[in-house]
Amino acid sequence: MQSRPWMNPKLRALSQAAEAAARKNDMASAVRKFIVAGDYAVTLDRWRSAERNYRAALELDLLWREPVARLLKIADRLGHERDWRAYIHALEGPRSWPHFGCRSARVVASDTGAIVECNVAGPLLELMMSRVDLVEAHPVPRFANMPLAMALLIIRRALWIAPRAETTRPHTVRVVYGGHEPVWLDERGDWGPD
Image 1 (tube, rainbow, N blue to C red):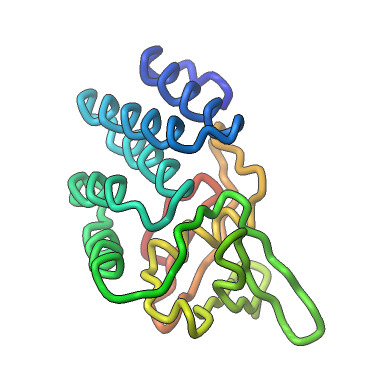
Image 2 (image 1 turned 135 degrees about the vertical axis):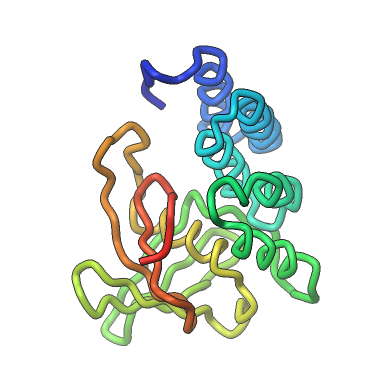
């Protein structure tokens, strides 16, 4: 993570320490550090920074409730309350999903189509790009109850292997997921109504 001159120095240090732990595959420490960074961002009223740190924790284990609960607490500030509420609901319902992260999400394409898969979980989403800036995604049957927010986390990591967190002009695509209304998704992981 590069330095952001406008970011609070302590918040920057906390986020960088979390990212360093993730790069060393110390996932438990990385998750805790991302949560601490997100909590600190909340004390500064830096809602977008808090959201990004909590999402970074969630990307390491998409079935961990604590980051989702924190995201739900601040969702009204960022307009994603319905998305995070649906995520919590999906985690509380019956499912046979393994614990897995999406930082290694990848698109696998063949003559029969494209899927997104992650380590441990295997195939998650079927993809179709009907236009250059439009991704249509549907969950595979095993993940039929996957909420929109989880799908967007996975799609973001699959499309942008090395997202540019520091860019002022992030790459953006439109995503239609499982019959939902289209949303825009950028490489930083932010999304909103199309």
